[in-house]
Amino acid sequence: MKRIIAICEGQTEQEFCNRLLVPFFTPKGIFLNAPLIKHSHGGIVPWSQLLRQITIHLQAERTAYVTTMIDYYGITDNLQFPHWEEAKRKQHVEERVRTLEIGMLEGINEPLRPRFLPYIQMHEFEGLLFSNADVFDKVIPKEDLIGAEELRQTMLTFENPEMINNSRATSPSHRLERIICGYDKVVYGNYIAENIGLNKIRERCPRFNSWILSLLNIRDL
Image (cartoon, rainbow, N blue to C red; front, side):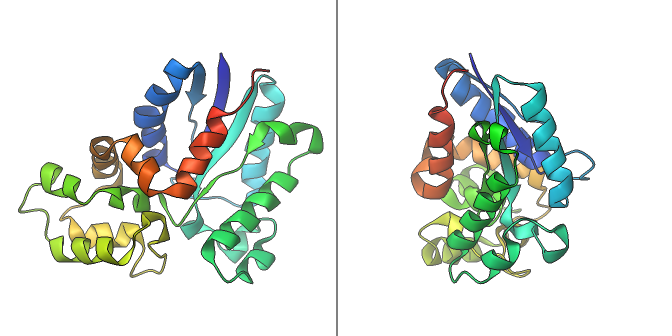
């Protein structure tokens, strides 16, 4: 069986992997394990710390591939991700994220690189939840869906949910806090994702889908 270790930024991403990705990959002969970033307290950590964990997994488990599920939203200057300054000069966010992923790959010792598939979610995990607005009406109590108009406007503005931008006021997570009364990212986030379904998320989010395809294409070691 092929094996993937998906290092997750937080509990929300970990639950997403366990609830949606594991059942998807297992019948295809791919076993996926989703550990959290160590010592992160639910957020991103400096690159040097993440690099250490990636390297440990690659060295300890020679028949496994390693990937990441981290948000672009939380990466800042002080975390010292490779190619960060170059990425900031890119005009489009997808170019910035791809530049960072290239830097992450180049930061791995060369013999280990073929088994590392870096992935940064653009802009953050919660963007995937905007893949189907109808699900909100079905799973969120009417009295808690207090931002139905903002949800509708967001869906009209962004054809691709991954492009919902990442300012403090307009990031997907902050939109959801306004749209859903008492929004809890772990509970609501994965409940919504499960009801949307992986196929719909892949259909609406091309960059996320490309990551899934890259994981499907790993070879036996």
